[in-house]
Amino acid sequence: MPRPLLAVVFIGMFLIGVGAVNHIQNWRVARRNRIDPEDQRREQDALDKYFAQMEQWLRGPEAPLRQDDSVRVSAQERTIGILPGLSPEGKRRVVRFLHRHELIKVGTARISLAHADLSSANLSGLGLQDSLLTGASLRDANLSDARLCHYEPTEADWQRAFERGVLGSLSQPIQVSHLIGCDLSGAVLRGAQLAGCILRSADFAGADLDRADIRAADLRHAENLTQKQIEGAYGSHNQQGGMSDTLLPHGLKAPKLWERPLSQQKGVRQLKS
Image (tube, rainbow, N blue to C red; front, side, top):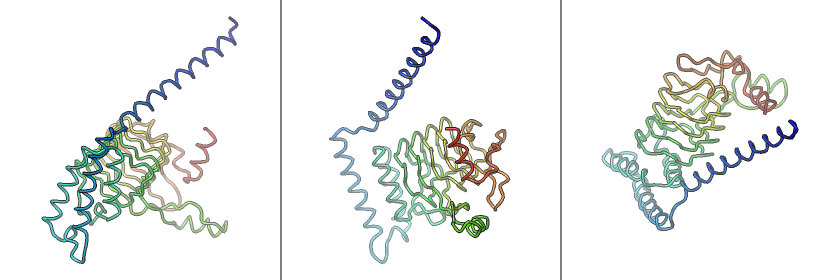
């Protein structure tokens, strides 16, 4: 068989193999996330009771959950107790509820998620700015495109707006979340907004950080974080305009690309893809 034809056959077999692997991985994920109808009914009943009790503690002018420490302890126990038995979607509903009612807000949190079982939770695309997630287990969780910070204009942003007449992407992270000591091993953080977030001592073994925004984030003492992972993320290093540096663990180096603004980093990535 001619060499060109052999090459075509080899490439075709390789692509088929890759497709088969991806199909198997997707099937495993779907199977893992699939819930038996009876289990789904039990989960719904458990969530209905949980939300009803929590809303009762939040209701009225007294709102005992926000003032009474004994109620706070009970709410804490109920939250930590229900999470391990929930599906990825069930865990999503609980986290969204806690965030919406500002029960896990940095500085004023009434519920601690330290050691909470959020493994495999589907938190993709959620707005979780200003959340206290310190110590939570987010192993294999899906945080793709999740927003764990807000942005506000810097002086450089305003200067660009003055020069171009348009305010582009905002640079300065605010309302950042705390994920100190979190287990993020195997987590999908693809496209997540983590700028300015506190991620000290978090475990990133096997985590997907592709296109994650970790500008000005604190990753000091992070465990199992590799140079390859940060090369795939957007960060900041010696940037002009007031953006703080991404703080990395000892032994890792900021990519040269991180010296450019976020818009330019994204442009370079698009050209390479």
